Amino acid sequence: MSKYKEIKGFKVQTLASDTAASAMAGGTWASGGTINTFREEAGGAGIQTAALLFGGQQDPSASPRRPTAVEEYDGSSWSESGDIAAGVSGIGGCGTQTAALACGGYTGTANVDTTQTYNGSSWTTVPATINPARAYIGLAGTTTAAITFGSASGPGNQVELYNGSSWTETTEMNTARYAVGGSGTSTAAMFFGGDGPNAQAEVWDGSSWTEVNDLNTARKQLAGTGGVYTQALAIAGYTTTNVASTESFDGTSWTEVADVAIARRSLSGGTSSPNGASIVFAGYGASHQPAGSATEEWTASSDFTQINLGQVYYNSGSNAYKVTQQPISGGTWASGGSLNQPRGYNSGAGTQTAGMCISGYNPTVITNVEEYDGSSWTEVNDVNTGRSEGGGSGTQAAAIFAGGANSGGRNETELWNGSTWTEVNNLNTAKDNVQNTIGAQTAALFAGGYIPGPNTRTTETESWNGTSWTEVNNLNTARNLMAEQGTQTAGLIAGGTTGSLSSLHEQWDGTSWTEAGDLNTARQRLAGSGTQSSAVVAGGLAPSATAATEFWNGTSWTEVNDMASARSLGGSGTPAGTSSATLVAGSSDPGYSAATEEFTVPVTNSTITVS
Image (tube, rainbow, N blue to C red; front, side):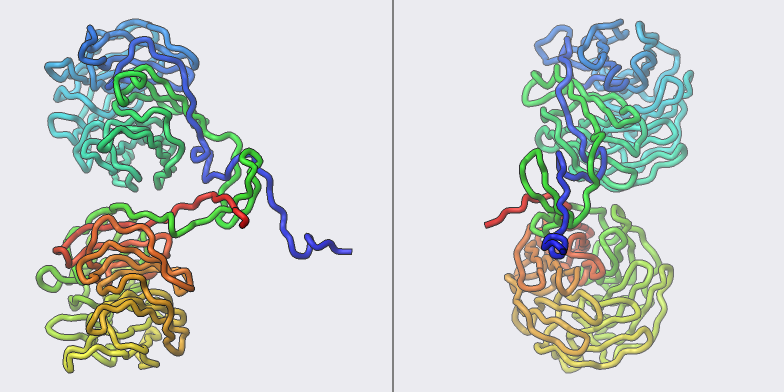
């Protein structure tokens, strides 16, 4: 006889801790031994069970301000070892506890160009010097193969390689900066953060630097650890205040993980072991102590269950049932890479990590097209006919751009194949003020808009089959400058203007339009992405520029976190994106802009409550 639970139920796994994205994501920090001579801006080397601390500075009342004392860590306590030749702060360090390299620094009156090596008991000043003398540099590698990058003085983007006997200048960083975090080797390194504060990260392949995804939190005076850069940690630092944030890099993107116990800046760190174990020490917190003497040890999770969206489990440690969700209410906006050409009234296509910005206006019509890779914009081939307020949709490899304004309304349609634009059959009616089409390159909708000839807003809807446009059933309410997203058989439009600001929302089922729940904030020139059952709209004029963001769950609109900047957005969103990962770029109000913002919803483990 079958049991009810076998028919209707499902098994719930019991776990001792929450699920995690990776061993690093499930890692934790623990307090380590206390440093004998507290300091900040010191050099560090070694691993968690065999670390080295040298150089740095104490508070202004201490004597000497910049101690020469060197300390070694055995995994539990610090002991003094052979002194370094001269006390300097802002010194770079790398290598191991028995074979360390130190270079650069600041004496209190001048930068130094000195290079020193440590053999496990004593320091030797070698003839090789960095050029020019500089401090607050990044350093990675070993005593026979190292790389130094950045500087608080001089060019700021200078890079030098060390071969065990001399330094040689090589390819410069893309962005000059200092007080960075770094990790890796002389042939596979990376640096991140820095003065600004900065969120940018760059990767070195032995010959050139490439920008990769930014940190989630821009900061300077942070620590970086990682024997290989794909295991890098960006730890603590300074924004407008000291922070405790830790982020893990997996070779593609940064993930926020467990915070250090003491928020601090100007801290030092060693490289990580193959198992991901890392260490940071010293620094400056709310005061010189206790941060200046503190050690914290990072241990990656050795036993974790991979996080899986929609998973239900029982956490025996917290005595709670949990579900892994991606709640839109937890989504936040963050700055992305700036467009190369500021503009407004532009169209969009693609997704958050593979987006497009098409044509636009500033203060004349722009034919320029740019592609986004998740961190920066690159110019690609122009459209054949530049237009503002045209309709764009599709993907970065297969986009469509139709209608728009250029000396009146236009009916041109162009298709993008990933490298060039080709003119194809025109719309039946020339119109502008549409902002985006709905759907894909081979199956799109062009709804509403403005017909300049008779100067009227229209309810007209046209359907594209990959070859030609066909008129289909009209919208219920004529309007223009609305958000449009979804697919050719399940589309939606929201907001816009009917002559006055509108909050109306209509949905398309493949045959006809039906009115659905209204937006909370009536507005025009807004952007959107997502589907008919899960969509996000943002920005616009209401009547002045707004940062308001709303989420549609298939039933109603809910206000969620605002954008960082209030602005009109035209069709600059990514209609092929999702409600949990969208992108907007450019603006016409207040002023033409190159700014990009990304809306991202994290995956979280939430406690199931029963009422």
